[in-house]
Structure formats: C-alpha cells, structure tokens
Image 1: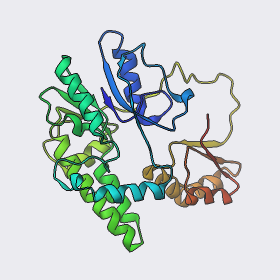
Image 2: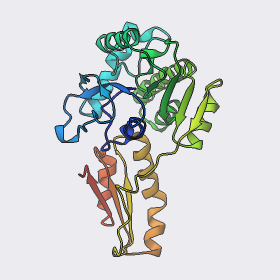
Image 3: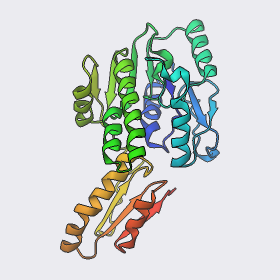
Amino acid sequence: MIWHDMPSPFTGTSLPAFNLLRYLGVKHNIILISFKERSAEPRYIYDLSQYCEVIEPIEIVIPPSQLKAILYAIKNSLNPRNLIPNNFSYFNLYYMPRMQRKINELLVNRNFDLIYTSPYVPYYVQNVNLPKVIHSYDCLTETWLRIYRNRKNTPEKLFYWLQYMRIRQYEGNIFRKFDACILASATERKKLNSFFSNINSFVVPNGVDCEFFPPTVGAEERPYVVFVGAMSTHANECAMLDFCANIWGIVKKRIPAAKLYIVGRDPSKEIKDLAQDTSIVITGYVE
C-alpha cells in the first residue's frame, strides 16, 4: 500500500486505507509505505503495526494556508520535471526521489500480489507490471473544472484553468495504467467516464463504523442539522455556501428553532461569515 499520509481513523481521506489495513491485515501480509505530515500531532498518529508492516514514513511539509498552497503550486507548475507529459505529480507536492528509491527497493527485494495507492501518489508505480488499484474517491478533473468556472477574478481563472488542464492530463494518462479505479459514488464514476474512456472504474461507497459510532439511545431530539467535513475542501465549501443561500432559509421558515452546525477544519472567510446568521454555528476543527 502506498499512501499520501499515514492511514488513520481520524482523517477522511485516510479512512478507506485504514479500514482496509484493519480488515485485510488479519489474513494478509501488507506493507505500508507513506508520507507523514511534519506538523502532525502525535496523538493523531495511529499505531498501524498491529495490521501491517510499516516502512518508516517520509516527512512532508503541507502548506499551512491556501495562499501558501497556491504559491507552492505555481512554483511547482514551473518545475521542468512537471512539464514533461506523463511525468508529473499532483502539484508535485508528493513527489520525492527518496520515496521513489524506497519503493524501487521494495519491488526488487519483496514479492507483491497487488499494489494499492491513493490518487496523489500513483505515478511512483504507474509502469510497474503488477496488478494495481487506485482509490480515487472523486473525479479530480471535474472538481478543478468547477473551481475554474466559479472563479471571477481573471488571473485566478487563468491559474485554475491551467491546473484543470494539468489534472485532466494527469488523471487521463495515469488512471488508464491501473487495473481498477475506486470511486466513492456512482455520480463520481459517471463524471470520470464523461471525461475519459478505458478506465476500469468501480464504486465503493463510504461507510460508517457502527461499532465506533453507535446510535445514542434516548437522546433528546432537537431540530439541528450538522454538516461534517474538511472545510478547506472546495466541494464542501461550495456545498455549504449553496445550501445556506438556497435551502437553509426554507428550513427556518418551517422550523424556526432549527440550527445548522458546520463542523470541520479550516473554514474560509466566506464560511465564517455565514455565522452572521445566528441560526448557523461554525465550529472549525473539533476533537
């Protein structure tokens, strides 16, 4: 398994990998190689040694703000290596020669039946002659096209159009080299198929661990709506802005006591401004 972060039960994009390790690790020998965010708090790093063999993760620095992330993206967009077709990563954020060397050593010294990767690191094994599965969650091409269309500032539109074109080339070229591509919904699969052909895609919906999140018996019923998700994600931000602009007012007319809780890290100024409506609560990150 090759992952862009340490799989854990605490972060959404790592949950599928964590649960795969948790269940398949009982009967199969799994080797995990991944990055680890340098600023990650130790309490959120889960001990995976009970499920798999963990290769020492490589530390990586994630830009701490949207502005720094954009500047990082611009810098790496001009990287000559990224201008070569079929040879660039997703913003080059997760490309490190050290990681490539580690993976190459494993492929030489160990025998593998299957390679399973996140959508941000498949280029490390795109030409390896083994069965390969990429867990993509969403159609990134459609996401970046939507971001581009929603921008009103001309320089921003140009920047996001360039990123959209790069991501479209990225998905189209690399995903075809994998035996299977897993998406979170039939809608995302339909989007992917509308852009590309000859990608062997499957739907594996996100689930809920009912043992970890059991329903509370006898809980007081309140007219609360809760949205949970990383608010730094463009899709989540757009969803809440649209919901509050077009739907929440209708809900309040029918249920005046209703409250909306938007729960998730890194809310933008636009999301925070929604709290001017006293029926909307923006919590930011919660434990």
